[in-house]
Length: 231
Image (cartoon, rainbow, N blue to C red; front, side, top):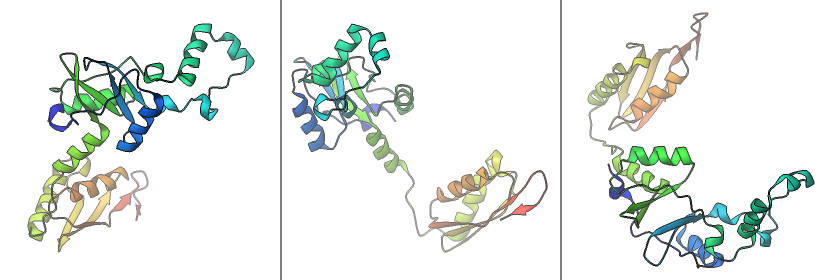
């Protein structure tokens, strides 16, 4: 799946000269936490988010430093900080160092960029112009669409076989030590595990099989050092 298939387009934007008050109102009205900033030619010049508004003189939330740290901080850094806490327009607080993505990028690339740069959204740019934005919520919507639907007319034996096959394909399932029984779409897991992390993995494997309505975990943990089972 590529970015253009899930991105929000057109994106809601603001301009460098937009007031901070107007940008904040736009975020609240549209239930979003960040906005791309574009110039008159629709070229991306920055991005502004809720985080840019939390250190403000109006809220008395400016950064407080000890006299020593204040002395060691350069005048330029102090001046830039003053602009961000007292500025009246978006260009005073926006982030200009922007991470972007192309509409033809794969979703894996989007996730990697979000994790690497610790951001919740990425502007989508083509030929220098903003054409959309992809956010964590867009990824969540895509996930919901791709998750398998729960089908209720699958026979218990078919569901049971599907779970067994899925477990058998995993190295962590230890070659069949987990047993499965399905009745009316409810899967019961029995048998033994040697690592507690296998318990959750087995449940997830069963839950992902179409037709499963619930999973009951009756697995027994066997301590690999003393060989004693613990329920």
